[in-house]
Image 1 (cartoon, rainbow, N blue to C red):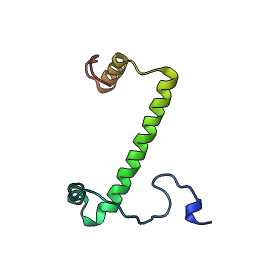
Image 2: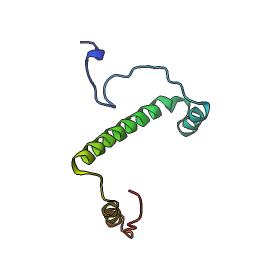
Image 3: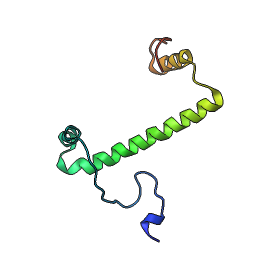
Image 4: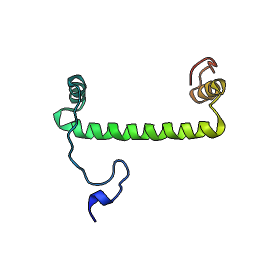
Length: 93
């Protein structure tokens, strides 16, 4: 069975080379952080984080369809409870 026939979760499976186009400023910033040989690993981790965020966004949309949007005051109160700060009920969630 070829690798193209197998579905791997993000971060798993064999590596595969592709061509990626980035702006000069973005590439420079990445290389400043990780060096010339760390770019691929950096982009792999960034892509994995983006996939996680996209999946979370989809879950939130599905939740909102079923339960309606979250109450901003309740979110602020729970955030305060988690962080030990004031509830700041007017804050955006």
